[in-house]
Length: 395
Ligand code: ATP
Ligand code: MG
Image (tube, rainbow, N blue to C red):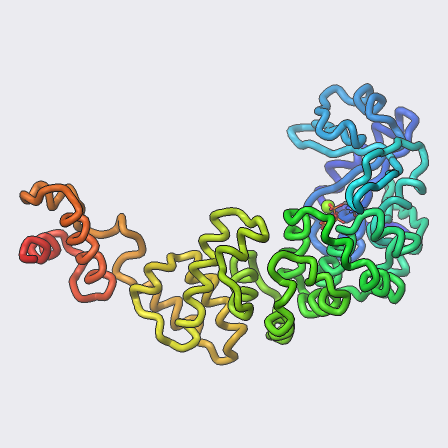
């Protein structure tokens, strides 16, 4: 079996494989890029695995960077592009059910494939596209099955994050968990408590945005992984409701988290912080989650739309469309676009203009300015400097 390597990402990287081979070692494309190419999905980054040890890789190429040398990864720089070349390795002595504390470099591809999480992620492709499939990954790819490489119980014990990866891939690829893998998920869910929130969150947010969110969520709930996620432990009702929403794929992080928060009874900022999400996303999502109920009850006014801001309005509109089948998203988009101003800076009146007209700086000036802004947003006054100045001085 051969995979089509005409995708530009592969074409550009094939010379790297060949150079390594010419030096007498083996080199393959591995992991997600091979899986996605076989599935006809877009390729974002190509990973290369080799029998050459890091020091040997560095001798083959003129320009390299030690990006993760202790794990065997050397970045090879070629015409301005960096390629991660990782030595075949085995991982051992997993302590605390996360990340191995020792990696051993090996010369055998098969051993490297053996340490990978799922059979579909353990495929390797040679420079000519020939697939090396030591663990039945091709058959599972055909059958749309996620099967742990080797014994699923052991694999989840070694690294509990793999359980979140399982449900993430289920959602992202629309695959089904193979029976033993699903059972191991249910048996080992509590091990998730050993995994850093950031790493759980990265998988969970990809699950939320996957083409089969419903299946990924339902496996997560069946296995009880939710019990070990931040602030989800006692959210069974909300999560069941969330899993029942229209299956349509969610387009981005902001709308995904907003929709989740719209069905859970939890404070948005605290929730996003518990999930260690970035501040900007937390801001967007918390303002959006506040707006959603006002949108679905059609109570949102200009002031509420303005206060939410463009990103939050967009996320709230998307989320609302999942909660209400006949939700008029376009109507609300138009309504937001038609706001007289979209940020405080767009107000035609400035504090300076008020001072130039004789007002003293201070809290009173700030209040007047806020009043003018409110009036403009509500459409009660035009966003015109002279009109606003007159109105402000008359107060
Ligand atoms: P994507 O890039 O779409 O997230 P991917 O399969 O490439 O999917 P990565 O996290 O980039 O996922 O990992 C690359 C490869 O490394 C995987 O395909 C898998 O073979 C291996 N891998 C990653 N994480 C683990 C893990 N926790 N346990 C075992 N193998 C892993
Ligand atoms: Mg990848």
